[in-house]
Length: 143
Ligand SMILES: CC(C)(COP(=O)(O)OP(=O)(O)OC[C@H]1O[C@@H](n2cnc3c(N)ncnc32)[C@H](O)[C@@H]1OP(=O)(O)O)[C@@H](O)C(=O)NCCC(=O)NCCS
Image 1 (cartoon, rainbow, N blue to C red):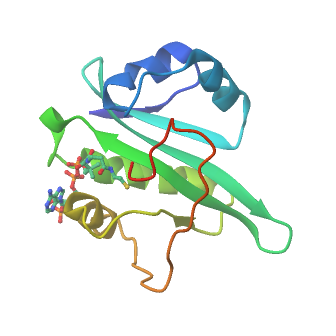
Image 2 (tube, helix red, strand yellow):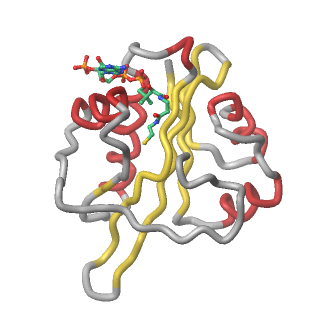
């Protein structure tokens, strides 16, 4: 298994089977043009089998942190350490880029995600809740 940073549409498409929806070329180009957006793809031989995406968020007063936006591994490749390796690779990139930390939102009802984030060294902050605003129906709030 190897992990590579995607910098082209074709590399993003390598990870498409692990995405929730079809990759949108226009949104992908916008993603790739931004140096603060990162997509790391896990390969088994030449096949993309998982990905993690992250976005650098900068505060005027607190510097930059990495928001782990999405993580997914193909079901056929679960429980082989790929999810954990992807998180560790994004954390290494975050450190390299001078981020002060990394955070993610997930659901308590997702034991795989909870176990994987814990295994990768994350600590749970039980005080925070997520509040969102939806402007279209592309990303259902339960996704
Ligand atoms: C969450 C997900 C990415 C984990 O990927 P994975 O490659 O199977 O995870 P790993 O093999 O790296 O597992 C990491 C640790 O979590 C544990 N774990 C993984 N899945 C688990 C499960 N279903 N139940 C309990 N523990 C689990 C592993 O045992 C491992 O523990 P260890 O390091 O102590 O041995 C994968 O289940 C997935 O794609 N789920 C659907 C998408 C999703 O829910 N993404 C997260 C949304 S926030």
